[in-house]
Length: 221
Image 1 (tube, one colour):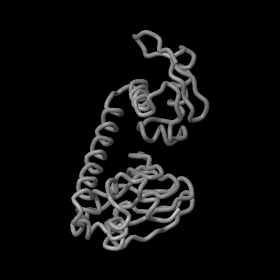
Image 2 (cartoon, rainbow, N blue to C red; image 1 turned 45 degrees about the vertical axis):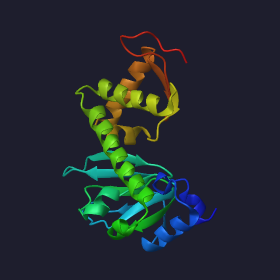
Image 3 (tube, helix red, strand yellow; image 1 turned 90 degrees about the vertical axis):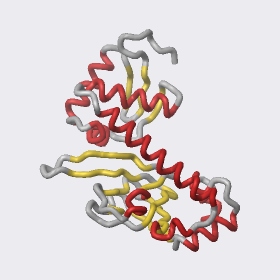
């Protein structure tokens, strides 16, 4: 698959013709880089000038406090984006972006974004930024409750909506999920075991089946 064909997987290039995409990639100095598992793509504190488009692989956005505790802000999958807000305002990055699998990324120069004269591209970019704001709101709502169970159930309900199913795989291992929810891993594993014993759900590694919602009628799968 050539790079133009790959761009059709990204909403950023929706409604654009091949020749328009080629022109945009040239204008924005598109370049491709490859990363190994656990390799850092962007460092916390770095001033970012480029938007990353994930052609293949997975990344996470992760930060560390002064005590070394980690907080996962986002999972970035194939055909997703990262760094767009920072690249547009030239702000220091507040987290590390790290590859969790072998990953291939297309970088676009954020300094030249507004030089693109195709309205469809700018509209798509605005939609992308709005979608990321919604994702951030979802993260805030997920971790807002004080109890671990509420945070966990908020996250699992969000996955139900994303997958439109009560059976799904989450993108995190147990430690990553704990970091995302800002809870202790062993406590999270204990809570999951309790919920399994109560018949609320079942799981194996990152595969989950939700059977019923507390204080509601059982869910039919």
